[in-house]
Image 1 (spheres, helix red, strand yellow):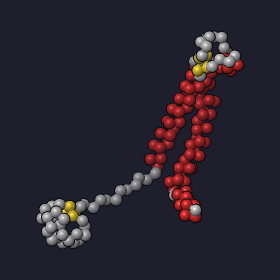
Image 2: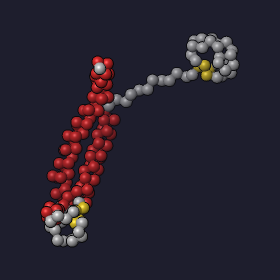
Image 3: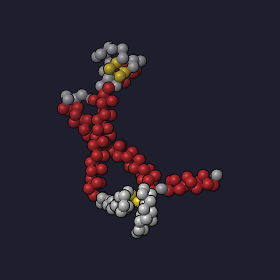
Image 4: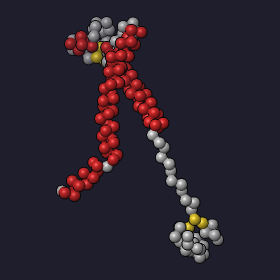
Length: 151
């Protein structure tokens, strides 16, 4: 049991896990901000442009009595199921804004953070006789069995 707890502690202490946890928490808060931006700032403007249509209130009553119910709540109070396509459209709008903001954030971070320099790869050592690749510590070529100088 102690070994299992130690392994769990080591797993949680890894940098990637902590970064992921922080990212999830910040993502949740960011989602709340974007949802507020959409619901409280953008959708009223879109409603004004579309003549006062509340996108979130668009629905189809499943009894197909169009115009009979003034709102989703009225239809549901009458016991009629509703297909709330307006809420779906608004969630798509939320997603697109969140995705665009994440795109901009990643683009900004890639410009701010220094790029990791890759270590130069060593050229593979070659046998002077058969030109096959040889391990850097080898004294005999595994391809042609010639004696080669070690480096």
